[in-house]
Length: 377
Image (cartoon, rainbow, N blue to C red):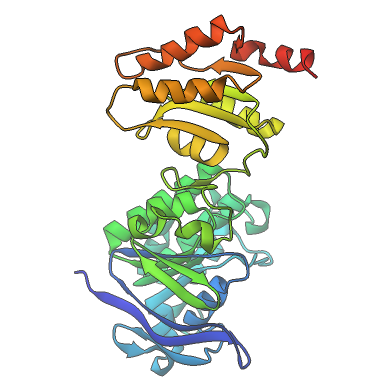
């Protein structure tokens, strides 16, 4: 069954009477992930805490299955919604198994005694998340990655329809980030859950989310699919970055391009030049490049890092016009580096650049670049 499970109407959140983010409207269906993105301090965590009733909302209503959350009992909310937040908990004398079992408390009697069914739910959650070996280990003696998985297991065995996660990948290495999000995606699909979370890793948000909500300037500024949000110049403005420093294709940011007239011309194409471009950026050396096709893997990186690029239309051979344009730029540079390793009918024009560079005495090999710099200081 797929349908709306949690929604908000005209929600305004903040502290006391001060609104941090106002006029929020959203709805999340079963089997969907809504991810909140935005700069530090924009109000993502404040929104999540207000949904969880950890903060009093200033205005508006949150609904779970059409019911005002404020008219639900604490147990009703706990059975519908669970959370994995950024705050580090430090339980005393509790094993990982004890922490996970606490997710069943909304279903137990007043003494918190787990039934056989409760224990089975705990076991299933531990197996799903892969934390069975941690069951008898003190919770305070495990790594951050293990903590996140234990807390996710706790949230799962609560059997909610909705899971709220605040920066669940914080403090995790790339392996554990991917592992956690793969588990989450599996949960959403197999258990038909609705997930609302915040993420700082834009590339992961792009991959895992069904919809993205962008928090900026005290409002939910834009909501849409990853395709609608990421493939434009919007992300650069959301995070107040230099235009084109955000790579829409790879959903990653590049450092600021070196300033000044290009000193090096790079004959490029096919992807082999990317490490060299970043090397030039790290060294602060402005450079130009060409002739590169619009559909080349190197193109988006060059758009962010190169001072000047000679570009050819996708699927078209490098034209004489492009070659001549590149030659004019190349002759103004101190050196030419060739990073092309393969030549074909589409980039044969670049071979003309290579021959000219050699004839002009400008050509140096990437491996000799460091020596060249030392000799020309």
